[in-house]
Amino acid sequence: MLEVDTVESAGRVLAYVVRAHDGPERTTFVTPDECLQQVGFVVHPRGAEIERHRHLPAERTIVGTPEVLVVRSGRCEMDVYDEAGELVATRELATGDVMIMTGGGHGFRMLEDTVLLEVKQGPYLGPGEKVAF
Image (cartoon, rainbow, N blue to C red; front, side):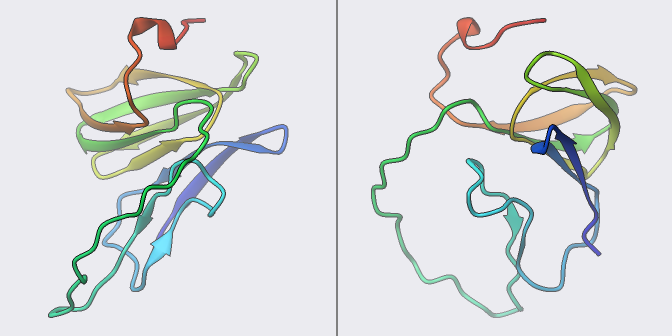
């Protein structure tokens, strides 16, 4: 069963944490349609095919840098902060967990040797695109 932990502040979702699991039985998206980063599990039965396709150009206005982290191995603690830099929540992430950051800020402490797969909106603008607090 899909277990999703939502971190919110002032009625705004800052992060979704999807716990490691065997997968849902049917296609399930974690993020709502209006979220800047669409993350979900797409389920297909054996023998199914995805018709070859390409995505048509679509102009989108994106403010911010939505981010997805997949814990490939190890364990870490993640702190989630609101837009004012105030700590909202701390969550432990383990192998197979997925974190979808949709707002606020974050920081990590590695509890073991850890490998994170990071997916975020590009292009990368250099060190000036983020600020430490």
